[in-house]
Length: 392
Image 1: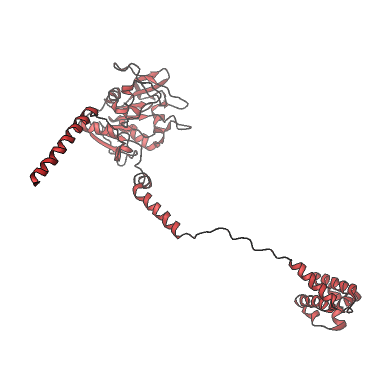
Image 2: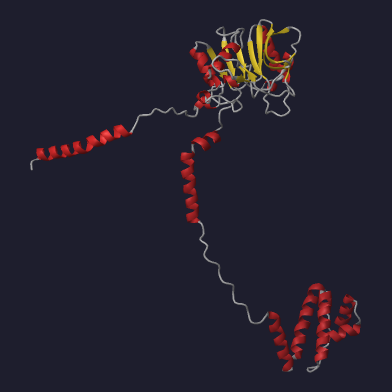
């Protein structure tokens, strides 16, 4: 068979097998497009106002984002707008005074009340200067009438407030119930100050509100992804929109190095940790089975001593037992009273009697060896020597 014929047969076989399989695949499979929402990366992961800033830049505005309020690095000019997502109670009194002076020259300040989750929330110097009181105020949803969403609500998680502006300020607009406001626009000099119960509608992360029952089509739409939220944001930013710089203070900090290492660097540190544990397991000392207990002796030490003494008594070696106890007493006497131990005879007996405060006859009896077969005398003298030794 020639090479050309062989390859022709191979092509025919592949054609006969491949065409039915392709037809079967196309009839049993359908192309489906699925949209996956990936978690935010970079600055969008810690800056709630990142999407707002990008939208404002796309509209041709100058936007500056700051993690915290720092007036030394923020040259605020008349016509600028400052969105202060940072807790207003944390603004110190000097900064509050500087902000009020800047608003009087034509600035636009947007602040919010302290969050509901913060225990013992206080107004702070800034809200006190505005005449805003949010202490002991709760939160509940405020209806926001939208044509295509009749059940739309806002400020469900924000702390409501009351406002009594001081002299020189005036309430231009307010929104909410009587005594429980969610929005108030104050006029101060040539500028304006907006106080809101919450700024969640400016958040671009798309966090659904669990307290609101919405239809399935709009269940995952929130933040600036919602048209109503975009309209509300545009209304809040309207006073100085397009006039100056938009300053966005998002009151957040980038993730720490350890946070990034733990959550993003696990493909590196997890294998290294497993390798370290494996090396430690390999180098660790191996422990086998428990060793059996040593066999117990048939007799105790006391039994051996008693048997040895009885053996000596039986064969008339009682003086050896007495000499052993007497040597033990004299050894203790040399350590406790070398001068008495250096004496001999009656002088030693008198010195020991004086030291122990015993009678001369009792000490002399203890230091005199008994007869070979006097067992009772042996026991009495050994008892006396042991008592004397213990008293030294």
